[in-house]
Length: 320
Picture 1 (spheres, rainbow, N blue to C red):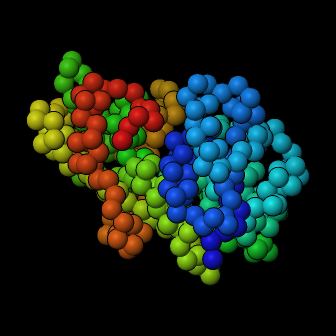
Picture 2: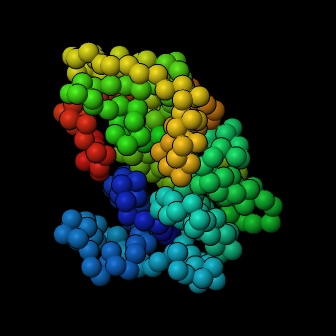
């Protein structure tokens, strides 16, 4: 049975993708509410104002609130009326413990269903002490969910990286040097990484929400693609028709870089992905393959974004 009242936390790229997929499919008896910052509601940018107006015309309502400043008690009260909460807020900062705060409030409010912000790698495999404090917090969230004594059923959707993040210049895997596209392999050329596009994550989340909700809680794995760095370079050459430079950033090099700049978050990510634990899984065992859902693979993504990749443009919601 579909949830009667859904609250989505946030209105960024992922939340928008989830809404886009849910709106045309949900039963008329199911309500959709989006929690947004009060300033987003009272002083929106022109682009955000258009989005709010468009969503409102489709029956979406908005709940202005700042989760960071709300007390745990007030947050619990805020969550109580809803039968499903989807956290699409991401990480505020390493010290905010935002996701554990949200999860504690969801459980205290006895919300029947919950999809936490776990749209990422396999934190169980990676374990604690990865060098990413926010990843340790994701394990704290899993500990809370797995503990006995609460009534909430949960679904974790592990997606790997957003596909567009492979091409994010600041991450450094794909870049442009001297007018030439360069691929930098993290750890080794046959190391693999799983990716799913935000649009596909939205469709898969809608499938989970509106499909049969399992009796027990569970972890699902999605995969738009699971790609090695060698195949990524080959895909760029084939689709763009250019020679692609290849640079290996091995673990020793990346760890040395991180020691020189230990507070650089991207350098932390590079080390974690170079080690290769928990950052990839076989596409064949993914939820989207199981359900027969078409998804965007790396070759599709490159073909749709060729000019942006050639120019080495910064990541934005314009990626397709």
